[in-house]
Image (cartoon, rainbow, N blue to C red; front, side, top):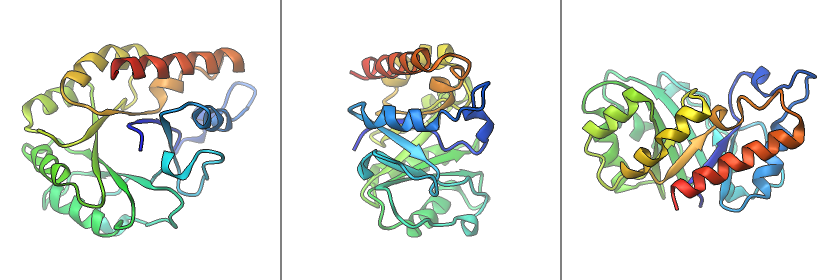
Length: 219
């Protein structure tokens, strides 16, 4: 299964519309379907077209508590869950999440946490790799990189998330992200977010070039 993911599961539909109200998500699905080595993150109810099941990831809505988790009917081999700080610790919450998602080949855990030690605990959990494969999805802005550098991530698999960064900022961080041990990326707006005003040909050319830049950074 790939470590390069293009995300189109954002809750704000307006982000995907051009000035003439064209929805670019079908273009992005088709692009990923014809780009070897890339998968796509979609909403559970969105469908993933011609993208093979093992290259599709169901992006679940972020949760504040495990009881908020709605487990979808499985149509993908991977699933992504974002969750906030938890008073009982992020690792126990992650274990509760995993108990509700036992059949997925990979579970991407996206912690929105600044509690000291939580990232270390999640990394231990990831290194032990239950559920066929646990992958952390970590922000790589200044705060995120500092947390990754402080933490003892070891061999735990993780991918970089763009977290709203613009392409130039995100791409400039890729060499450092690679040095810190990232296996790949799960990225959305940094790749496609500023292309809505371009014509279709220019938009797809720009997105392809950015995907290739990411591939080269991890070659």
